[in-house]
Structures are given as C-alpha cells and as structure tokens.
Image (cartoon, rainbow, N blue to C red; front, top):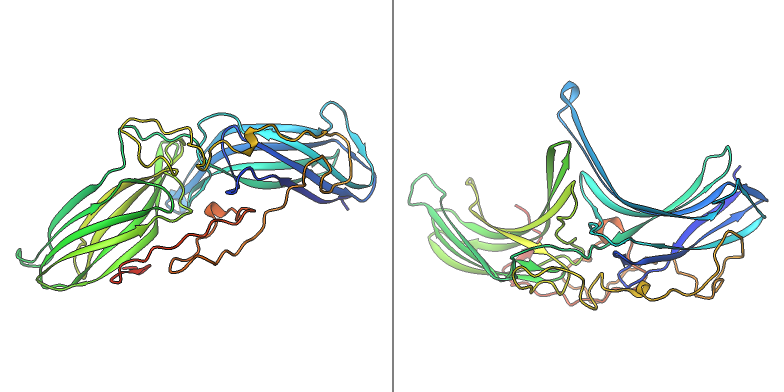
Length: 394
C-alpha cells in the first residue's frame, strides 16, 4: 500500500476570471501526507501547453485515422531530488511551494471541441524507485493576448437573397438583412433587421442562428464541426405580405474568442439569417462574425490587436507584481494557512449564481472548467421582442 496520501495541488488565481495569459506566474503549493518515512526519488511540478486533434473517417477496412499534436511549451521545477539519488522524507504532513511562469509567446486560448482541444496543464508528480509515480493535475484556463484581424473594423453589414420557393416562378421570396456590427465580445448583443417580401402561397418564419465552426487539420486532411450557440425564432409571416423583423441576439458570455493562431485547429463564427419554409430550400444570408476581447471591438482598419487594455481579460494581472517571498523546498513542513508568509490559496469553489439571471439561462463554465473562486458579476438579461422565442429549432 502506498504511503503517499492526499496528494494535492493548489494554485492562486491571478484574477477574478481565474484565467492566465502569457507572462503570468502560477504560484501554489503541493501538499501530501506520508504514513511512514519514505524515500522519494523526485517531486516535480510541471506546466505545459498542448494542442491535439484526432478523428476517423470511413469504417471497417476503409477506416482512416487522422491525428496531430502541437507542444507549445513545457516547464518543470524540482521540489525534491533534482541533484540526488533520493531524499528521505519523514512521516507526517508535507507542503512544498512553487512558482512557474507562462512564457511569452503567441499561444492559442484554451479550447475543447468535438475532435480536438487546446489545454494547459499544471501537474505535480512524485516518483519513487521501483514504484509507479503518483501524480495530480489541474487544467488552467489560458486566454491569448494576441489577435490579428487586419483591415477589419466593427461596422454594419448587409446582405440579400431572392429565391423561387414554389412550382410557379411567381412564388418568390425576397429578403434583405442588416446587422449592426461584425466584431463583438462575449456578452454583447447583436441587432438585426430583416425586410421580407413573401410573394408565395406559403407561410414562413425568420430565424437567426449564431454558429461556431471549428476546423481540424492533420496529415494534410481536414474535418469540421458546427455548433449552434444561440437561436431566435420569429412569428409566422403570412402569404402575400411584406414584413420588417427586428431581432436582438446575445453572444454567450462563455463564448471562446475567434481562434486563428493554432496550426491544427481554428474557430470561426457567423450568424445565419434565414426563412424557414416548409417543403422548400430555406433562403439565407450569412454574416461572418469575429468574437474578440472587450475593448477590441472598435479598432481602426489594420490596427493590431494587443496587448490588452487595462481592465480587460488577460490584461496585466496580479502576477505581474513581485510575489510574496517564501522559502522553497526540498524540505517538509506542516501545511496550513500562512505557512510561507502569505494566505494559503483557496481551492476552487462551486457557485450557483442565480440572482440577476432572468430569461436567459445560466451558461456553464467554458470548456469544461469549473467556475472561478470569485463570484461573477450578475448581468441583466436583455428582453427580446415579444415576437421571438429563444431556443426553438427547426
């Protein structure tokens, strides 16, 4: 039976969002209990960033598998046993402090999709001779500081479609649509206006769908997946009528930013405005959309995106200031608050923020990460026009 009990890895959040960016320092502790005196070969804490994709096509003898991976960085710090054959640790509780720094670089934000992911891992591993190592991992949410959308500026966009929808050529539908901007941030609201001329014998409804498209690349091949993030549906448009439809579509607060700085996967967005017509191909207008950090939505054409403005997610964080001084291992000492002259970091808390959320449902934490140890600021959900119901699908 292993003498190592309750191996735990705790780190300090550097901002209320519990995110990290290039240059941030991860400060934390590795704690464990030994039920007897134990010779430890090494105790290492590692910080690494990786992107991986994998998918299969076909079946049976025709099945093909595609995989690719990208290692962005890997840093490690020895807490025990860097220059020795082993260290004997006494029975009891042990606590080792560490500091690991995210390197500077154009690394993509954390992401998890159907066929791939970008993950940043903090890991502690204890090794003993002739024994399986013991380890514990934490996923850190990383937010890139680098965004490149050259020649673009947040501005209105418009599009139109003119289509026959019946047996006779006179059964025609015309639609023109406008959106107030093509660059936005998570939590922003997009305003649409659609003018529809229904010269047909069919009723129809206007629909607005925010779509996330992810493209995965490996071995010269690509595949993609599409996900609907938000959808609004209008009332019926009668036959032989003209209607002007207005809609406000809220970008989810947990939407990942547009992602173009990863070689093996990319994330893009668009809003599809279309008419749902029974027994006919739906006329549609597609609006490309870029989701960027708050403060970058009003750039001038060609202006670089970065570094973050003060106060934005990924802006200079608490870790940019000198950390508290504390002694480092390799030596044991009782774990507890204030063991190194600064408050012991609190483990992540599970929150249930319900106040301030009305019509809009609470969004889950992004990419499978737990909620931060700081309560989010409640937002007041906008009220959609009465003619719309959110979430209805065709």
